[in-house]
Image (cartoon, rainbow, N blue to C red; front, side):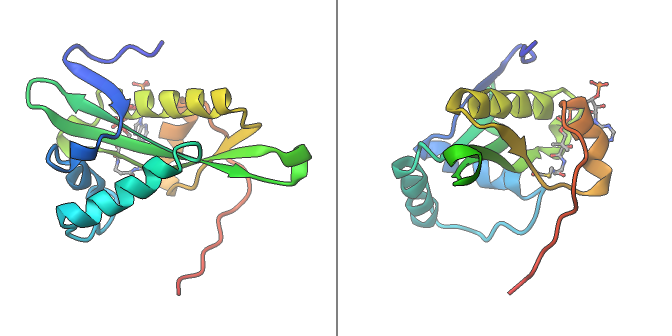
Length: 151
Ligand code: ACO
């Protein structure tokens, strides 16, 4: 079920993925910010220190040693559902020249697995209307409405 195409590897984000184009993959989503290596490392170290809450994974293309797909699940602690855990899937991105090879699906399958292993009672995410069919293929159902407030 979770077979990658040959020549690709799925693994946790590494401290030297800055050099492997991790932030460039995120540019398919939104403005990323032109980090220096130090700015990337500062955030990486925070996530590492909180690695029971933040799980960021990547798929790399082995031949080029480049990151081509990324995603994160954030595990939130709640009081409801008796101190329940909810997984939030964030920042899913596949390089534009690598889309359509099921890399996005493999990222989501891996994040759902992590969420289930961590004991989340549900895993949720926000997405645009045009990505609804993709997430349905990944086993999600449309529910509720997203609200946003920009500072
Ligand atoms: N409309 C309809 N079906 C789609 C779409 C779409 N927009 N995108 C993918 N699918 C289908 C595929 O056809 C495939 O179906 P199949 O199994 O019947 O062949 C299935 O969904 C899996 O597709 P993948 O090949 O895994 O998709 P891909 O690797 O291209 O990743 C993604 C999809 C993540 C949306 C990618 O196109 C991308 O990075 N887009 C730009 C950034 C983006 O929008 N990210 C999601 C933001 S939402 C969030 O982060 C929570």
